[in-house]
Image (cartoon, rainbow, N blue to C red; front, side, top):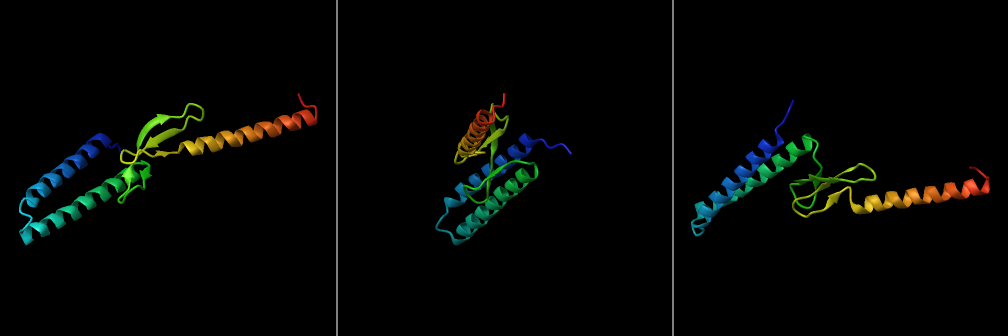
Length: 127
């Protein structure tokens, strides 16, 4: 099944925009208890839309950032040249997955293996 992820994101963006517009209109009558209740209902609906967006993104294979709840779908940012690993970035907090610390740990581990192999090659006169 093919999904047009841009269309899905656009639909959620339009829904969010509609909620924001209605919320702004309802806020104009903030002294009205019914308006306050309507704003609460709109905020609840907006949160449910964000949760649905996260669930859809997860089902489509997107990484999720846990900087807030509901989680934010992370977007492909670039590919690490050394490992050919895709790096995803959160549009909210700009954190990356995998992180730069992840790649630094891999480099340190590889360096330790290389040093060990060099020591063993020297010790045993391997070519």
